[in-house]
Amino acid sequence: MSSSGQGEGLGVLDSQERERFEQLVLPHLDAAFNLARWLLRSRADAEDVAQEAMLRAYRFFNGFHGGDARAWLLQIVRNTCYTWLEKNRPLEMKTEFDEELHVQPGPTPESLAIASDNRERLTRALETLPARFREVLVLRELEGCSYKEIAAITAIPIGTVMSALSRARHRLQQALSQRAPQEASREL
Amino acid sequence: MSCEHSNTVLHGYLDGELDAARALEFERHLESCPECLAALEAQETLRSALQRAQLYETAPVALRRKIRASLPALRPVAFSFRWPLVRWVSLAAVALLVAFVGWRMIRNYGVENQYQAAEMVDAHLRSLQAGHLTDVASTDQHTVKPWFDGKLDFSPPVRDFANDGFPLQGGRLDVLHGRTIAALVYGRRKHVVNVFVWPTSERDAAPRSGSHLGYQWVDWRQGGMEFCAISDTSAADLDQLQRLISQ
Image (cartoon, rainbow over all chains, first blue to last red; front, side, top):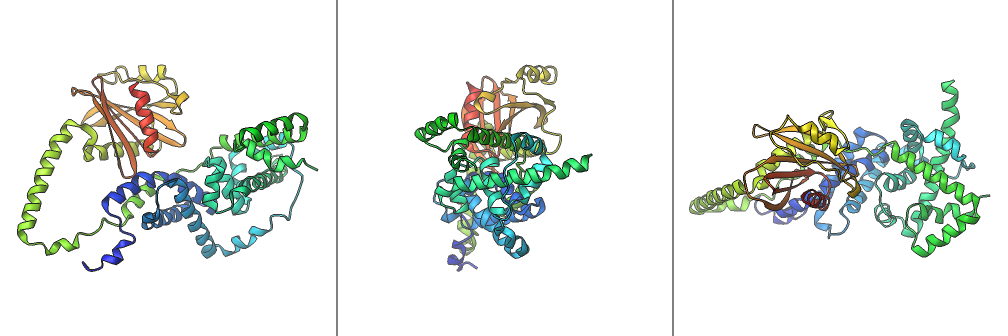
């Protein structure tokens, strides 16, 4: 037991480091949970994955050399989510690449205003987007991340964050306008 | 066909990510491009709808506890089992001394006491459970302050700091060591800050801070009151609120 000095190096932090982890990383649990919830589209799965990601962050905390703790944690959360999705929902990952299939003109501001004024409808529209569009929207609109942070978290070059957001927003508008007629006819 | 700017620069502009020169250039472009103007308007509509819908989902309180409990234990002190008895005895003596001195200091420094910090964090956690956050929900300090009258034997200072990013959300009564104390609730982005206030006969003391279960706390005494602010927001945020309250 006492001779396993090397094995303890990874994963067990001394109390000072643990305190640092609790001050720097643990407060971002909400951000971790929120990103996981939107990537996995499930609160229950997000709880498991956020926990797993947090423990992973704890194990690798020695590798965190200061800087933006939230971005560092969210990067781990994102990777943990994709690993989880590949393992548990492989089909979902395959349908990620049909993004150019339905190119339609964007909706008018009026129809958009009506369609988006509904939490449930927005949630569903956001959930129909491919995960890599969903994640930039969640990071930007819900988490308030800068382009630099988004680039660090998602590993896309900073120069393409703007166009990724542009396409994601376009897709969200489409998803909202596609929903709208259905909803309207159901309500009649 | 849409203007090429509406798919690129417009988003950088919307997100405040353009430098001043490019932002100005785009604003000039907007004056002559009704298409971009309409697209910008649509994007702003979408953004405010996303904000209004409050899609941000915060972690359940139980998850925070679970994670904290499952963090691997501190480095084991297994090597010390080989210590001879005499060292154990001297260690115990030192520990006792430290505990005693610490206890004396703690009596002087309020929440520095980990137990008290733990109690405050528990009170904070309780407040986050459904329906417990505020007894009087109002963003108006002139509603919250009178509400405390007659419920407490002291009058906590109630001010709104919405302009500084800490909107007042309401107030609540809580209990600490069998005494009824005031809890002021502030918002900080998606986070909730509880500021507990109770009277003290001790002298003023500069703010002290720490963390417990991943929650930050700041404790200070001023003008016969002890304050303890607790939240899962950053330590810097709490320091800012502390300065606002003590101004």
